[in-house]
Image (cartoon, rainbow, N blue to C red; front, top):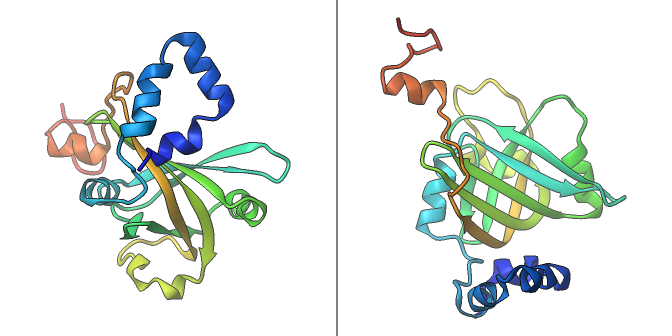
Length: 189
């Protein structure tokens, strides 16, 4: 089965640039012989469960892209099964751009980063809005934010991306675990 991510992203114009720049043969092989990458496995589930944030891109009905940061406690983004992810849509600034975009164009891209380990996972799918009550596993005990709805992503494809230019960054909790700061963000002297 062909590589689903490249099937969706390597459009004719992308392939033309690959030919011009000399990378077409490499990516032709990836497209033909690479992993199918449309079914989430244990590596993807483990990576998703460890994230406390990600970036989500939607496209408006006028064709403009919109990228939004989504955050919460580790595990707020959850793998429901090998083809679906879900997360609580917490009340925020109440612009509803991503949710509104999905009404006319449900295509979505998620960009998940692990800065300390210089890893990233890109996910393409279709976004739908569901009643939060239908997903009790998205209730996050002890987290104050109010979920307004569940957002479910039907996964079409994913791709693990090259770590070459990922600058390592660390959260306060990761620095505290290493002894560089006190819990709560106070610097150690």
